[in-house]
Length: 323
Image (tube, rainbow, N blue to C red):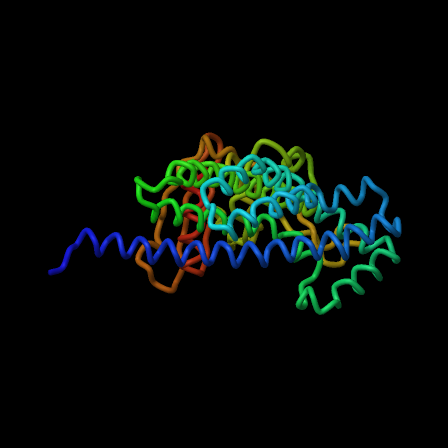
């Protein structure tokens, strides 16, 4: 006779066995990669002095401490002590938060040194050509700890979910899954903020004009693109729009033959989204002909047109998020 309870337990056990095998195998490969970077990049850079200590620290951050944490975890996993091993590993999770906070600085240091330091550039190319790295570049290798943190979250949560409450390491695995998930969320928040800061700096570099100053703090970048401004009289004029969490900026392209600022934009207006009323005039039918958006502000009304229906819908959605 079939026993649903026993069948469910068997499914849990199969999933658990598959998860622990994947966690062990990926941890072995991860530790190997951490060690290769520690040996062929960090170790040799220290010995040769190709990078000064501040630049080396900015580039690799807490890499060696993360490597030590993996070396402490792996024997537990190989011995089947999942609960104690992961519980002990959680004491090192702050290293991943620190690594994420340094990621922007690390990439900037790498690009700067590759550009300015000929010896470092030659050294990196030589090390990347080693067969141990399987074609990965240093830029790819530097992202391994944050990729691994996401794997930790997926695998440890799955391991905890497929461990019975009567298991001796159930509480340890449940706690580890919670702590790793919380760390992964903090790292995701850091990553989103860094990407937003990059967008703001990029937009700031594209813009000139008094109203464009101060865009690099206190707001989130949402969208940019070309729209046609429909005036009360005359033909529609193309303008570049930058949408932030609190403002919509309209900019005019500078002449392509401008000696100093070709390819940039002059800020023409900055509209506060908190005072905006948004309506679709037409373009809601899903047809291919585009449509109009009406944006009403206390002292001005904008009619924005696009011939691309999908683009218009994306703008409408983004604008509703900002209001």
